[in-house]
Length: 427
Image (cartoon, rainbow, N blue to C red):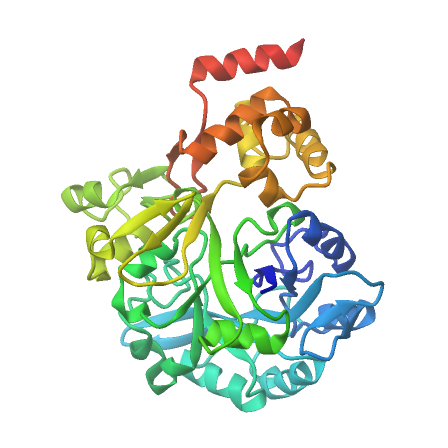
C-alpha cells in the first residue's frame, strides 16, 4: 500500500509572525527536501494567499491540489481559526484546524465567514462566537471539510489548555464534539500524553509542524498508508476503512515552548512537582505562572504510563493496550547542528551552511535523522554532527524544558566536548 508523509498545519507569508520566505514557490521547493508528500497550504481564507495558490496550483480531481509546474507534491487547502467566547467569568480562546476540499469550498466558506472576521488580516482569523458555532458554520458551508482541535494542550488557545480549562471535547463543543474529526498534538505534547486521557479515545491524533519558516517544515508530521487523495485523507482522519494513519513524527515535547510551567518575564521555569510544593505563583514577582502542557495533562489524565503498557520497537513508541498508531521522537537537524557547536540560535553561518550542505545531498531531513549509516552521515555533515545525530537516535541528550513561550534548550555533548569541537572547527 502506498505511503505518504503529510504536514497539514503551516502558516503562509500572509500570517503576521511568519517569514516572508513562506511563499508558495519556496514551499514547493522545500517540502520535498523535508520528505513531505502532502502539504497543508495554511491560511486558505486569506484573499492574497488564496490568489497566490490559485495562480500556481490546480485541482487534481481528488480534492487535492498539484503544482501547475508539475511534480509529485500534493497540497490540501487548510487554515487555522480562532474562536473567542465567554465562559463563566473568562473568555475562552480555542484554535481549530480545518482542511477544505478545493477552491469552491473555500469560496463558500469565505462568503459565510467573511462578515464575522477580518479574513484579510495578517493574523489567524478570529471569530467572536462559541467554538461549536464556528464548527457548525464551517460544516454547513462545506460539509466535506475536516475540522480538528488544534494543539490540544497549549495553555492559551486550546481545548484542554490551562487558561481555558475545558476537561472534555463535549464541554467545549457540545453535541458537535463528534464532528471534531481529529486532534493535533502540538509542539509541547505527543501522543503518549494524549493516550493517558480517555476523552481522546477514538480520536485520530495528527502531528504537524505549525511552521512559520521554511526550515521548520516537517519538524512534526503524520505518516499515512493508502490513497493520496482528499477522500483518502478523510478516511484516515475519521477512522474509516481505507487509508489509515501509520504513525507520527514528534519533535521531543520538552523542546516545545509550553511544556513546563513558568513565567517568561522573570525567567522562572517549574516542573509539576516543584509547582505542587511551591505554589502557582512566580517566586520573583508573585504573578501567576503559566501552567504548561505537561502539568495540565497530569491534572486530567486518568491513566498511568504503566497502564498503557508502552513499549519501544525500532525507535517507535506504542501502547499495547490501546492499539493506536505509534510515534517516533525527533529533534530537528538544525537544533542538532546548533547544539553540536554550542550555538544558542539556529541562524549562525555555521549552522546554516552545514544544514544547507546536508539537504543538498539528495536525502530528506527525515532520512538523515533516522536512516543514514554513520559513514554516510560523516561524509555528509562531518564526524562531529554525525556523532550528535547518532547520540540523539540513542537518546543520549539532555533538554532544559520550554515554558511560557520560551523554547527548550538541547544539550548533546558535555561542555568540555563542545569546547573541543569548537577548537576543531577553527583549524
